[in-house]
Length: 305
Image (cartoon, rainbow, N blue to C red; front, side, top):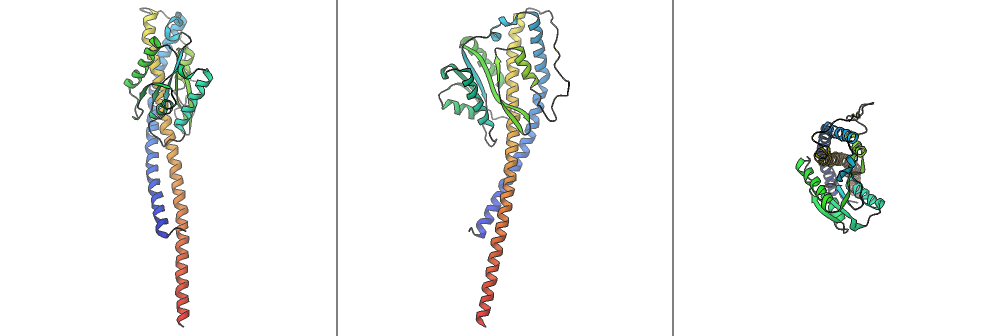
């Protein structure tokens, strides 16, 4: 059995670990709420852009635009993971979802191109021979517009000249504080019904920010386009791509902080439990040592008589 000093050192170690994990839990909770609020603040802009697209769909034949045409070619996967750990199965869930999505589309590995946002996903698929053409860090707690534009510019360039016809974004969708769901969304070709799902999904299914019952996005009527539909689509569709990627990054950030908060809470509870168990063991060993010493003293006194 370990000595009293060793047990005491272990108790102190668990208590220090619990202090650190409790602090990380509190920080992740604050960051998670900020991530949710930022995602909600972008909902009005996303809904307005979707409204314009629906009006165009009811007015002209928007399917003639290259970004809205269904063709056969290579697929691009935007894989959103984190650079940091201590978040449970957050990254493994996204990676598994990407592999399942590739197997469902029955594409060969050479027909798949990837953009890795986050070191975990980039390292995983890069080590397995996939064409990871671009890697971006995912360290900052905020999502910058420059970062989103860099990703969408790469997608647009490859779509025009690189034979990329389908683009998917894979990320952890924030459902509630204790539930995140790995999600695959097809963002190219751009379809109004798919974009509507993304806009509707900006609010979580449950919790403080859940939508009010009966709330919906009204379907607008058709209207006249100036100067012409092609000019409007050339400006609108890249912005819709920005919204889809931006929303995925925000959802991933909120999911990351939520998963880390839950993981750190579990670690804190486990540290307290282990410290409590070791404290009881410490008391038993100490009591046994005291009993043994008292017995030895008593035996010595008896022997001297």
